[in-house]
Every structure is written in C-alpha cells, then in structure tokens.
Picture 1 (tube, rainbow, N blue to C red):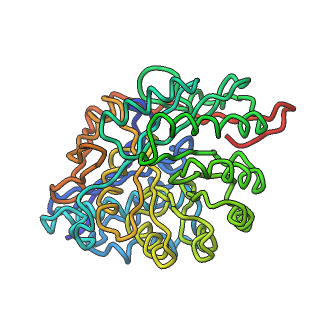
Picture 2: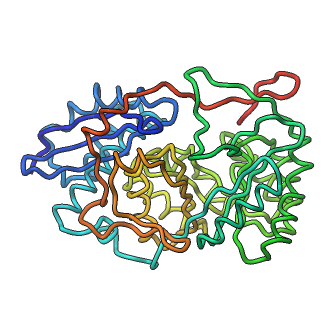
Picture 3: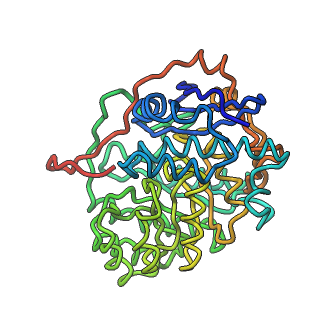
Length: 402
C-alpha cells in the first residue's frame, strides 16, 4: 500500500482549521489536524510546500519511520509550525492504520485503561454569581470537573471569560485587540471566587483555574498558597514556561497542583518540569506536540515521575484532534483530565464524528480508525478568515501575557 494523494484543506466553520487528508492506492483515507491558532496558514504552507511532496509514494504503515523522517530530515527541528505539520501527518497515518486493521486507534495503543475519559468544562462569567450559575449548569450535565474563571472588578475585559451567548472564541480580527491587566486586582479577587464556589458546591467537585501565564513565580506562589484551602485539582499556566527553574520557586511555597504545557511542542519542553516533579499535569496536545506518536512519548515519560495528562481541548483544535486525543486518553495509564469545549454546529457538521459525551465523560469512537471525517464540499463553503488572539498590557502600558 502506498500514499497516492496528500491534500491540505483550510476552512473556517466558526473558526479556522487546517486538515491534512491522505489517500492510499487502495482507497483508504486518513485525516489529521494541523491547526495552529492564529498561525494556520504557516502550517498549511509548511505542509503544502515541504511535507506533501515527501509523502506521495510512502508506505502509510511506517508511522514511526515517517515521523522520524519528517522530524530529523528537515534539519530545523521542533517549533509549533513544524510539530503541528508533523502531527497532521502522524494522526492521519494512525487513522489509516486503524481502518486497515479494522480497529479503533485506541485498540492499537494497547486497549482501554478506563471506561471513559473524564472531561472538564469552562464555567466563566463577569460576576461571581454568574459563575455559580454556570457551575451549576455543568453539574446538572454530569460534569465531575469544572474550570472557574471570572471577570476582575476594575478590568473591562479578561481573557478566558465568556460573557456572551454561543461558543467562546477569543480570536477576533486579523490585528490583535488589546486589553488592560492588573495583577494586584486579580490576586485580590480570585481567592474569594473559589471560597464562594466551594461554599455552594462542596468539597468533591474538582475545580481548576487558568492563570494564562500572567504572573511571576513569586506572584504565582502567592496565588497557589491563597487557593490551598479550596483544594484545586490544578492551577494552570501560572507563569510562562520558558524559565523552567521558576517553577521551583512556586513549588517551594505552595501545595496547589500545577498544570502546564498547552504551548509545548516536544518532550524536551517539559523534560526538567517533569523530571524534577515541578508540575503535576502536562497539557500538551496531539496537534501541537507532534501527533499521537510523540504525545504518547511525553505521557510515558511523565508517568515515570507521577505526572498525569491534562490535554488542552479548546475549540481551537478541530474534532479530528479531539478524536485522536480521546484514543490516547482512554489507553494511557497516567491519564488525569481532558479539557472539553463543545464545537459549534457548523464545525460538527464539517467534521462528522462518533465520539460522544455522557455524564461527565467522553467516549472515543468504536469505528475503525479515529472515527471522524471531513465533509470537503461543506468545508469549502467556509473560507479562511484571518483571526488573532488578543494581547494584554499592564495599566502603565507594558506589554503583558494574556
């Protein structure tokens, strides 16, 4: 069997997605997600210009050899664009292998290690009362874990806080919007939010919070310590992870668990954080971390140090990526949580799938392969639209994280 066609499909059914579709000489197809939020066309070009010409004629069964060929053969390694492109190929090859074997991909990864994939939802609102209403809504749907984000008094717009109807999408116009941030106001406000949530919903609901890289290590340590009475499952992305030593300072001052990694691209990005047990959950994704093959390596490495998975799963990843993540989630021994933001109807129509949500759990497809496809005719009705994530500035105008 040989690959005879490799096509890159860019569409925007609610938001932009990059999809790679491979076809073999026996008519078997496989698809992979190559979406990089805000830099979609960079990956699409990398695939079209540099990767697709290398795939035609290759044996689709040689997944590991193809991964190494694309990673080592380019000389320039790693980085979000390269690894997202490799991920698209790797995921599509696993899809093909499952279809050829007549098995869902998770069976090829060793079978089930659990009955379902525990997911968490996003409860956010301008006010604490609004957040409590959103948490209540998630618990009624059966969620066992909820991420809590609120507006901050005195700040007009806070990244990660959904205030309108429909699916939350922070990426807007081609030129990023700018908002004002105050660390002092934030640190003063957040502990009281979780006090209210715990008072309302008791000790057993798993609570999470995303800091969005906004703090310095000592500020993050202060936040983690102030949140200890409310027993969070994790405090996410407390600081930018480029300075991995900074997590030592956080660790010395708080027992609040730490999650990080949705912007990681390889096992090397988290090597120190994992081996020194400076984090508790690694949030790398199938699409940004080189596909199923490499993300499995990251999780296997993490398991040696009692670090669990907590993969990013927002709507900037297509249903192809989520389907792939679920096959990995259900099979690995050190699964923690899976983020889940349901896509809008247009996205689900373009990417028909058979994974399903039930009572707080997602269940991967039982169909051969990934159990997700792309309706190319429908996808063509949604052309690409430039969209960028917002940026933050401190009150004095200093450029800051989200």
